[in-house]
Length: 408
Image (cartoon, rainbow, N blue to C red; front, side, top):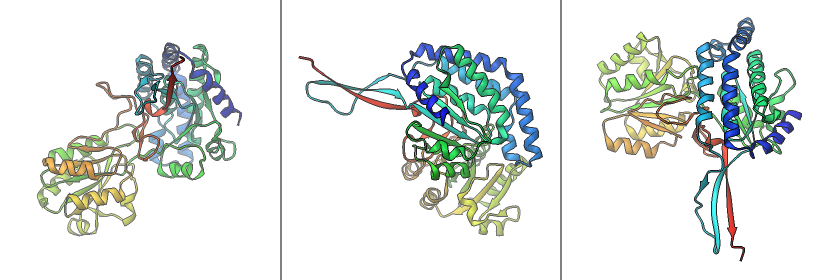
């Protein structure tokens, strides 16, 4: 694949550029993306019209839709990335020493990163910004329903990259109408250093099965909350509702709630009524559905699967120990939550849950461009491998160890 070779060659040049040069490129990318907003929205309209004719699911249509606000959010991320200090070539301490030598480590680019994504056209701009900031080249493989949007966004960013004097192969877009390009791309382990699949679980699993290059798994939805007996109703309601405000992708949305059998019927009913008023569809395990006709009985398979919509399933458990066991067995493993007033329970939950991130009396809501100094994020990873948790600039780097001896 010529695009992969071009990306590899460009990555060698990118890794040697100064941080100021990459910052300038990001500024030009942000300005160009802003100026081309009308053309991007026009292309997105074509994608939406074609997708509706093909009866694409409403979920994917929502992911596919671009608005001026979503484009401006991507512009702000590019601008923020341009203002950050250079993450590359930071000197770090090493965990070992060599006699008569100076030892240290530094962050380095990975090289070539491939993003295989479903809908979400603005992700192409955000991923490009993260890669340019870290000195990596990027190969994009979008889904067919977003073909027009991806083409216009990529062409816009490519022109900006060339105007900034960066290699033309720093950003490549693979076509959507040529054979099995996903298989061809993910087996290019000679040139591709990391593959990030982003979308529904079926896409992620397809990439994992076929890839010979390293894969960074991502996850969306099927996050659990355990409502302990001491947890307040207001806290639980807020955690659930706020977690669903991530837009457009419900990365950390709470979709399953485990409730203690000690909770009163009135407290459960108040929670369910407030959620129904907000438009949520409620499901329950066999026992809860039998006792409360407002709950639809959940199938056994649902506890392992993400809904990715306003559906929440409830299950009664005996206590914290059973809740931890159930979450570890059935959640997607990237963000799980606890509502409690007990410090002992919070510590036991934090240590017992095997997920990448735990939230205790806090909303797991996902922000790509959070405030208060938190890092820009592409998504969430649930694997115990290359990196885990929030996918940030540091995730797209590796470490080089340097041992410098005395010349005497």
